[in-house]
Structure formats: structure tokens, C-alpha cells
Image (cartoon, rainbow, N blue to C red; front, top):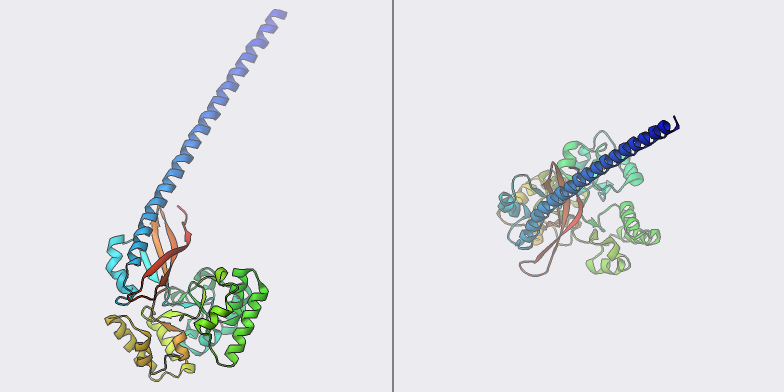
Length: 333
């Protein structure tokens, strides 16, 4: 009897060991399969990124050979779009008004006030002061109409220190530098100059921003906010229609600008002549002639990769264009 029990226990132990072994083998196989699946997924992800990077490199290379003196960005894009495929979308952000820096005075006094979505200018200012700046126009979707967010506004472009809202200018510098005191000092200087109706020249700004220019980068600038060669009719109409600029027969001059840029890129001198203003007129702080920010959207698997290209220009004629990629969002795929 003792022997039978011993044999029974041995048999049960052997069976248990076999079951455990089989279970371990099964787990090992599952883990191996999962590792293989994960590896394939990672390889597929890298392959998709590689394909997207190739398109990006092509875009950057083509942009670096763009003659911006002879061709607007819209003209350049029309000449290249077929080469990238129909799913690649590029558009200039420099023709759009930056909601993060928009002056409430411009919003109130121009036709832009009509783009508010059942809100007041005070509503907008309070919301932006408490929550902004925002990385995308989606942050403002409760305050502005969907059409205006798509066609008139952006959230990536220059904060022109002569025109940007001073609170948001202070906020941007504080966020980028981590120094509330530097930001407050800048705001104080901005307020002082505006009270005396004096603008920051490029040399002035270089002096004032010397301590934090590396942190802020190109976002704060004395460069004009907009590229008048790319701005839609609504934006040009709003800027020229602001009574503070005293532009007579603004609607006709908007159409003249559009007709002129269709033939060749506008220059600052040509714009000033059309508008009947001096080159130093405050409106020229808004109206520039070059695209500095491009929004790009490329296919990436079942989703899309989105990013912004920042452009800088040399002082050569024609200028050498240097593009660089900012903040890539690979989407979800």
C-alpha cells in the first residue's frame, strides 16, 4: 500500500511537472510571438517615418532653391505640388493673423470683430490671458467661427514687438525664458515706447533682447507680422480697414494689392506706394512681403504627420532660403 501511494505521488508530480513545463513553453512561445509582433510593428513604424522623412527632405531641398524675389510662396507651391503627390499639403501661415499675439484693439476696430463666435472682445481677452497662448487654433474654437479659424488665423508666426498684445508678449517671453522679471521688464519697455508712439527698430530690439534672444528664438521680432503676398482678402481687408491707419478707399487698394501680387511678388516699396503711406507707417509693421512659416501635412500610415517649417532669408539677391523643421506631430497610426 505504501509503495502504491509513493508511485501515485510520483506520477502526480511527474504530471504536474509536465503541465508546468508545457505552460512555460506556451508562455515562452507567446512572449516570443509578441516580441516578434512588436518588432514588426516597430519596423513598420520606422519604415513609415523613413518614407515621410524622404518627402520632408525633398520639400526642404526644393525650398532652399526657391527664388523668393521672383515667386510668391503660392507660386512656388503651385509649381511643386504635383511632384509631392496629392496627399501632401503645404500652406503659408505668414498670411494669417496669429491669435496668440492679436491686439484686441485691431480685433475691435476692424472687420475681424465679425469673426467672433458669439463672444465679445473682452471675453476673448479674458480667456486668452487666463489660458493662452495656445499651440493650435483649436484652443480658440469656442471664441471664433470655424471658417475664420481655417482661413484667417493661425497660432504660429512672429510676435511683432511693435504690434503684439503686450500681455501675451510678456507671457511668451516668460514661458520661453523661465524669467518673469525679464518678461516684465520687456513689457514695461514696450508700454513706454507705445505711449511715446515710438517703435522698436531692429537695432533697438537686438539690444533689448540680448539677454534672452537665444531662448525666444525668432518668435519675437520687428519683422512684419504678415506676408501680404499670401494674406487672404479678409485679412488684407481687416488690416487696411482699421481706421487707425487712415487708408483711404481701402477696398480698392486691397484689390490692387491682389492684382499686383498675381503678376509678381509685392515689395515693401510697391505696397507703400499703393497704400499711399510712408515706408515707416505703422501699417508696414503688419504688412511684410515674405513667408516665414509654412504648415505641412503629409501622409503617415493611416494618419498624417504635421509640422511647421521656419524659413530664414539671407540678404543676397536673390536671397538664400534656409528652411528648418519645427515641432513634428507624427499623429496616430
